[in-house]
Amino acid sequence: MSKGPGVGFQYPPVPVSWTKRDALLFANSIGCTSKELHFLYELDPNFAVFPTYPVILTFKGTSNEVIDFYAQQKAVPIPGVPTFDPTRVVDGQRLLQSFKPIPTSSEGRNFEIRTTVLGVYDKGRPGTVVETQSDLVDVATGEVYSRVISSSFFVGQGLWGGPSGPKQVTYTVPKDRKPDVTFEHQTSPETSLLYRLNGDYNPLHAHPEPGKKMGFGGIIIHGLWTWNWAAHGLLEHLGGSNPANLKEYQARFASPVRPGDKLVASAWRTGQYQGEFEEIRFEVRVAGGKVVLSNGRALIKTAAGKENKL
Image (cartoon, rainbow, N blue to C red; front, side, top):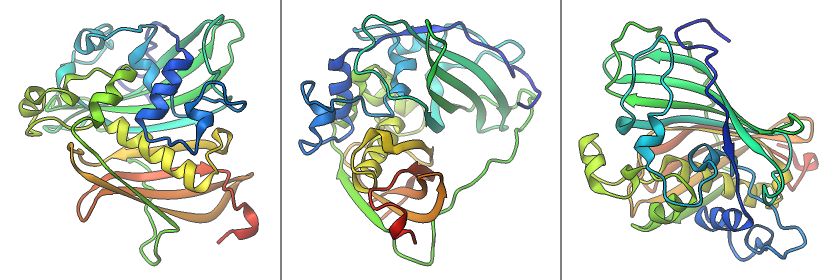
């Protein structure tokens, strides 16, 4: 971990909880289909939580009700850095690492999110990046079920004299061959209105005014909806929809998605393995246009296995 303002600061642990109903809603909202009843039907013998679900818990906490997003974000300042305006923040990048299957419900157990600041980087006039590590921990055993490395971009809140940060690792997609897998989805004005019910109640994704103030022209869809939608498609098409087959997953939020955009995801098998898990490179674009998820990389136990490696 690098040295710098705020580095190593630990937020107070946040208790989190979820129900089977929460797991069902999440799976529905990111595109799981009736062919995947193990994500959508609680009595299925293989009923499971979709493996990227922990990203929502930092927003949801233990609440089963609508949350005041802005009030929640103001809770704890980071020592040694300016106080940033949470009404002008967007996602930068997410990396999820899965260590243990997520229980279908937290009932009877105590879980919490433990978050540590990895870096606060001054990007000048465009804004500031805050990078954190959030672990989903079983309080009784200390076991870490998943880890999320996040970067949040505070728009127009730079120029405070902080470090610019290290050069980021970039995962590019092949330019010399067609993707091995493609899949698409037509978004609608209701896409983000459904996804927000998981616990991410940022008004930016429900009402046009915040987006106008931030220069987006109106409502944009949660970056994490696109991120989770792509994760589902990769697991469905390459990992047989088996939650145990997704070990790592990451992408960078390159540009916003607006309600009504049609998304197209493209993925390439690399033939490079970490144990049984193959590295997959991917990107998501608006059909015929801009990249919205870049730097896409996943470690998936591909259904075809090593016998068909590239």
